[in-house]
Amino acid sequence: MSIDVNNESGTEVDEQAILDIARHALARMRIHPLSELSVIVVDADAMEQLHRQWMDLPGPTDVMSFPMDELRPPGKDDDEPPQGLLGDIVLCPEVAAKQGAEAATRHSMDEELQLLTVHGVLHLLGYDHEEPDEKAEMFGLQAAIVDGWRAEKGMTGPSPAPTVS
Image (cartoon, one colour):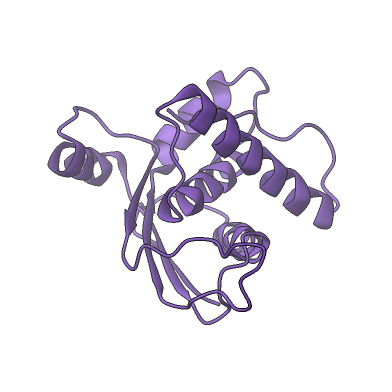
């Protein structure tokens, strides 16, 4: 799995954790091991610009996903998943820090960035949360992936609750 994490935000973030949880999420979703993913961490101004350009919405957001090859998780009967370019995930630590502090289960900026990384991966794989049934499926899968990764790392305590919009 080729995953690049590029921090352009000027904020210190746990890049290794972002890389690890992205790798865990892609393995859990059975994405081909030769697939490629890029994660870019930007400041609030850059995120606001992307948010306006691509979503026509004001202000910075927490995470944006830009799929490339529209890869999907393989079905249960598929022999081998296809490989390709997954795309880009853009994260904003300033928004993540605020969301983590305001969440029902308060957590750190880095924990929020980990959650947002999984959220971004799922969006790249075609998951969405516009409809209630889609939201239940996506957020349930997101929680399972984050919980599985945290258990693998020996982390204790509750996982961050979904705070993404």
